[in-house]
Image (cartoon, rainbow, N blue to C red; front, side, top):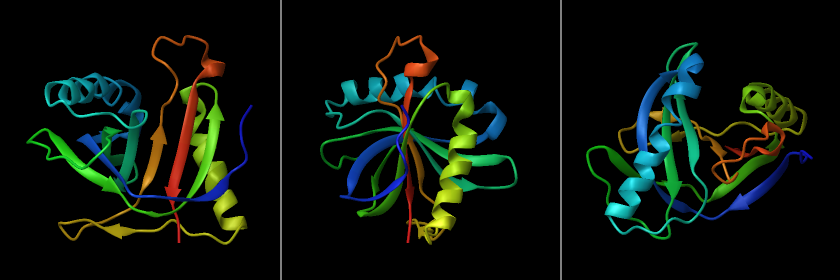
Length: 163
């Protein structure tokens, strides 16, 4: 059962992630293999996980290329390295929705969330990162346990930073 979108206030959340530029069509084959790399880094650096893995879509560079982070929330802020970067999700209001079903339908779930935002008077908030680059914050969390093969049981929690 899918849940209706809602606005929720979230506390700041530190995380670690690998940053990757990817075309929208290549997301399924490029981003998922990075999740085990992040988990390996957590283990090697004795860093404690504090939530499910995620894809954080930061910037749309043209009509089909995104800058994305593949990461995991962590219990406390840490230093990253050349490959695995440390970051923090902002304390703020987020529009959230939970979706159960195949990942191939996520684009329409995002579209429905965008319509809900417009209908309810919210805007997608843009932030400025440390380099001065403006970026959005659209996150897909993947809490489904590894090995789940029934596509109808795949859970994706989407959060969009709003103003």
